[in-house]
Image (cartoon, rainbow, N blue to C red; front, side, top):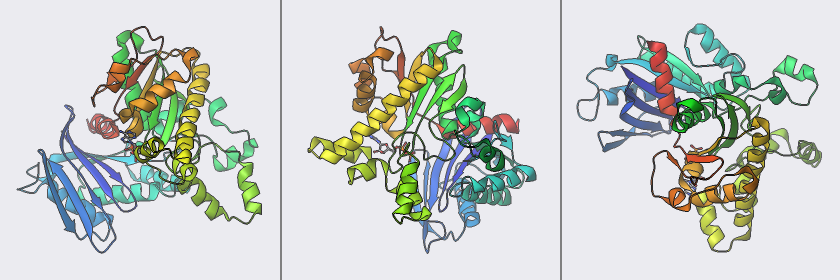
Length: 396
Ligand code: ADP
């Protein structure tokens, strides 16, 4: 079965076409700058790249271009568009309602629209992508896979904030958590690597990319996660501040900052970028650290410290810790930060094997030493593969 996975943003559509259940990627690519004068398509297939400027005034045209390209007789990978039997969509917010992936019908569309209130930057473009896919592939099964779904197992004690309970009842203000598809994927791979008898394993998964979050997983279920009502809470990220005293916002409000300015500050101007004053990109920061840039060093130090704190907290939450997983652009690629984070808390028992940690490899692998009490893994995340697998299951 050919399954198309779609991740639609406000001005882009990323796609991957899978042959399932094998999980082979037939093609992948992206339409960018939708709605601008000239959009562009980058399409990767059979080891080749096809890149062109296109007209894509809206998502519908973008989706049509993708399907035309997938079935093109030069750069395409299917003979006919109708070979694509199912489409899996990444949807950021599924509220409390969606505990797993679902086949999309009118009621699901309504719910995704409803949760746009909680994810105004993400759910509307996700929805636009779904509508465009339904329009161009009316006979395919359409499935929605939610970033929040994996975290719906978190208990009340971890998801209710210390606010008046009516705020939860009235507005559903609570911890939802994000990156769920990634945390679920790497936690399952980790349980596999630990061996069949370890499905009861207690695992901490660290997703460290531009956005960063960390999850405590007990016997395959998320029991706590660092992101909250929105992706702003928790770790220090590329441009997001993570945990702060909420009173800082009242204080700055009284100094004249508007809600909109504070929102932009906390989401787009803080984190690694805000602290360093130089960059939100970890690679740039590490280069600057080597050159003696003090604030870049401070940003990296705070980034690591916050992760250390959460690993400590989640170890206490889990009671016993079997494994820690690093994933995301930073988690997968940076051996120096992995070693540092593990060395910063010897009491937890994550002993890194330097050769394993620094080996040039892009596959999933153990990086702790054989005598490490807690096993440490690098597991490249693959949200698209997880969405394709869910979609294939639902389409069957
Ligand atoms: P996103 O959250 O947008 O999917 P990624 O998971 O691709 O982002 O992660 C992006 C981050 O990963 C950037 O901060 C980038 O600098 C960092 N990164 C990628 N490769 C390395 C590396 N070798 N060392 C350190 N950081 C890296």
